[in-house]
Image 1 (tube, rainbow, N blue to C red):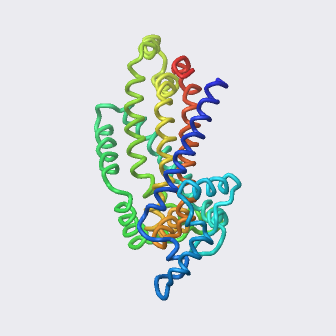
Image 2 (image 1 turned 180 degrees about the vertical axis):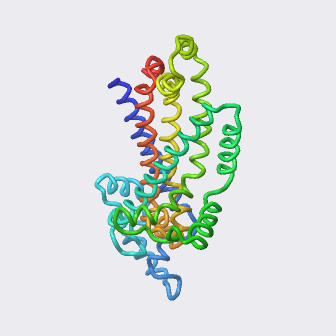
Length: 315
C-alpha cells in the first residue's frame, strides 16, 4: 500500500510540473503583449520605455528561465503581483477561493444526494414508468448547457417567483446557502444526470451477481439486499465518478460565477484573461489543475478500500 501511495504521489508531482509548464507557456502564447499593458497602453509608448518594462518584469528573458523563476516562487507560495490590481495574487485567491469552494461543495451535495438517490430508485424500479421518467429527465438535464440552465433558473425562480436572489454570494451560513442555491443547482444539473445514470447501471450490474440471487433464495428482505449487497458492491464506480465530477467542477464555476455575478476564482479568471493579467490567470489555472489532480488521486487511492476486488490489480 505504501509503495502504491508513493507511486501515485510521484506521478502527481510529475504531472503537476508538466501541467504548470503548459499553463505558463500557454498564457504567454496568448495574443497581446503584457509589457504593453504594464506600460499603460500603446499611447506615447517609446521603445526605450517598453524595453525598461520588459527588463523590470524579466519579460526579456527566455521562456524557460521565466518559467523556472515563476515555479520557484510558486513553491514558496509567492504567486506574483497582479498587473491590474497591483495586489499579491495569493491575497486575491485567498479572498475569492472560499466562495468558489462553498459553491462547489453545495453543488456536490446536490448532485450526490439527488443523483445517487435517483439512480438507486431507477435501478430498484427498473422497467417501470418511474425508471423511464428518471432516465428521460436525466437525459434532458444532461443535454442542457450550464449557462442555459442558469438563465432559465434566474428567469423562473429568481425573477418571476422571487424565491432566490440572482446575484452575489451572501453573508453568514443561511445567507450563503440562500444566495448560492441557484448557482449550485445550475452547476449540479449536468452532474446529477451523469451520476444518476452511472448509479443505475452500477446497481443493475451488481444486482446480477450470484450472491444476490443466493440472498433472495434464502428469504432475505429485498431492502436489505439492495442496501447490503447491491448498493455496497456498486459504490466503487459511483464514488469514483462523484470524485471526478467534483474535481471538474472547479473549472465549471467559470460560467456559473459569471452568470450569477459571484466573486469567485472563476470570475477572477475571466477578468484576468480579458485584461491580460497573466500572473492571476496562471495562478487560477494552476489552482484548478492542482485541485483536479489531488481529488482524482485521492479517489484512485480510496477505490480499493471501497471495492476489495481491485486490490490485487492495483498493487
